[in-house]
Structure formats: C-alpha cells, structure tokens
Image (tube, rainbow, N blue to C red):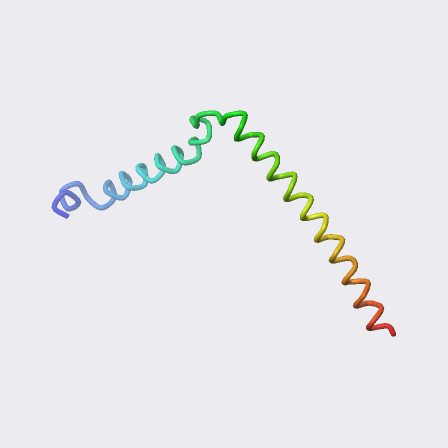
Length: 76
C-alpha cells in the first residue's frame, strides 16, 4: 500500500492494466507456441470426431422419428 501512495493511484492502475494486458496477450498466443501433437494423437482425435459425428447423425434420425411420431399422435 505504501508503494501505491508514493506512485499514485493512476500509475498503479496503469501498471495493473498493462500486466493484465500482457497476460491476456500471452494467453491468446499460447496455441502458437504449443508443441505440435503427435500423429497418434491426431489419429485418435480423428477417430473420436468421427464417432461423435456418427452419434450426432443417429440422434438426428431419432429426433426426426420422435417428431414424426408426436405429430401423428397430436393429429390423430
């Protein structure tokens, strides 16, 4: 607190803002500096994505069937 009184609130807030901005920039730039993944990890991720898309298509079909069923029930 003594440092803040000596420097002044404006400068202390400016320093705090600059530190926050630096952390924000480093956080945003972290994917650029990340080590590239291995081919095995890429293959595993591709398999997981394919499975997820397959599951999504199954759920879409089930949703369409249920919607059709409810539509038939509400009409009839």
